Image (cartoon, rainbow, N blue to C red; front, side, top):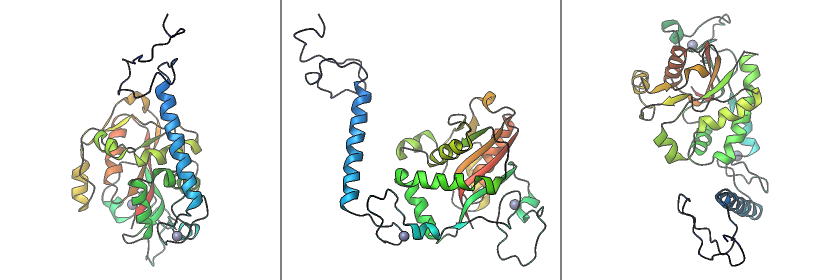
Length: 288
Ligand SMILES: [Zn+2]
Ligand SMILES: [Zn+2]
């Protein structure tokens, strides 16, 4: 009788993929759910270990090296958070480009030169924060992108969520769409930073996050270089998989950084072509 009295010590689990190192002798009555339990117990073990380390060794702020509070889960201190710049008016009502250093007071409908020359595909774009190329915020964003998703994803996402109402007013948004990474890059990195931000924003707005609707169908080079090269780099790189999910809907596209807007503009073009009613763009930061 399987599993009865003398349970076989070397019982194997041929269905397990990847091969399972669970020892049946230690838990003879395992079913296929043991994978989930194994992963969960490993994760708790790792989390407990790091909480203990954090308790013993107070971490330092990634930017100013000041000591963070005992047990802090963030990588940046309150003082450094306080120095970040928010995107406030005056800015272009369409693309959100700040009118910094302008001595002339523009009427609220005044568009920037770029938007006057060529209208973007999105209805409007806004960013929660601003940074210059040598700004310390850049370091925070790099930390977020290259590994510290747990420590930074939540605070940065909440910061975006907090700024949604002042930046967008009360728009009708039906769903949130993160800018996708190419499958290969997401596998290498282990996560998509835009998706982490989109999840926090979507939760606050109580709107669904459409993770698999917009796809990056070919790998692109990192967005560097002149604006025209950036536009060329992302042309034809995105596709909509299930257009019925976005047809007639108002979408909030979420990304981490807005530099020239080439990526979000290309995504807006593809989403509008697939039947979206309108596309609004929201990024965590905007490069000045
Ligand atoms: Zn600091
Ligand atoms: Zn503009």
